[in-house]
Image 1 (tube, rainbow, N blue to C red):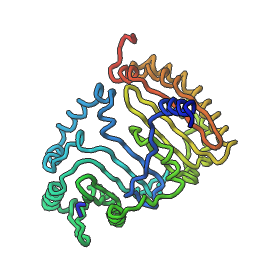
Image 2 (cartoon, rainbow, N blue to C red):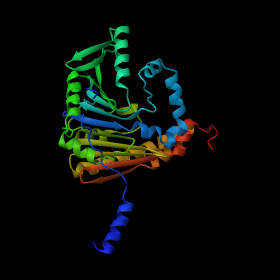
Image 3 (cartoon, helix red, strand yellow):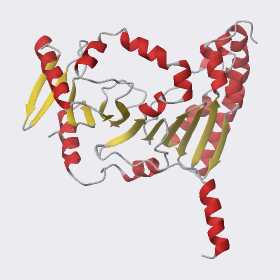
Image 4 (cartoon, rainbow, N blue to C red):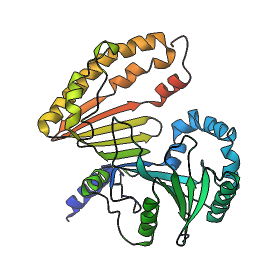
Length: 336
């Protein structure tokens, strides 16, 4: 269970050197076929980034040291700041704008000690039987956790010493374990697979989702309660069919959001609506920066935002520089 000619050749070399080393993301083979939302977090890459090392790593360490979970992590031989490589999450029948229990699977890749994990799970099941339980399902041992608030239980198990999974349903666990033993590609929807191919697997975080029909009931705030007009966006949201987000954390944070619209006309309309929204927000950012030192970089950040539309897609890009992050983390009260 533990589971050409010389000229052409020269030109090719030049082009090859100038092309980004970005590599298309491959779907994790354990992903469920029903998924309509996939998120990947490259934990190790984020923790190794300049910004996190400079502004957040020590705080993360201190936070972990101050939690009761630290003892449990030690018992199972897991250091989340060293042993986790990446986390892949998938949501099924994703609901937007209405309350509903989420259905999904989380895949954690890293370095694990299966024996310690099972022993720790067994101890917890004896210590708090109302919330923790060990379930035997054939040759598989599944750990069940029931939240105190009466929410839906979470099931988890160890695939092997490199992978641990958790899900909202035992069937998702069983399907993932079966996929782990098979030499097949992930059976996800073709539309979702196409979105994944456009993602850089080295991105710190990326997410892709099929959202056709899912924004139909979403109501954006309006009226006198907010200082911006969202009417145009409200009318365009139901015409959004796909969403892709990529975040790259390094010395700066670069963000790219792509909205797949119903057609080219709605893509142009969405681009115009977003540009108008940015114009409305800029003076508000200036006011916020004048009142609160931590908000001073907002105007710089908004100035980096660019929108383009090609065919059915609208792409929004932006950057948060390391310098601006520093200003938000440690603001200069004198505004210098």
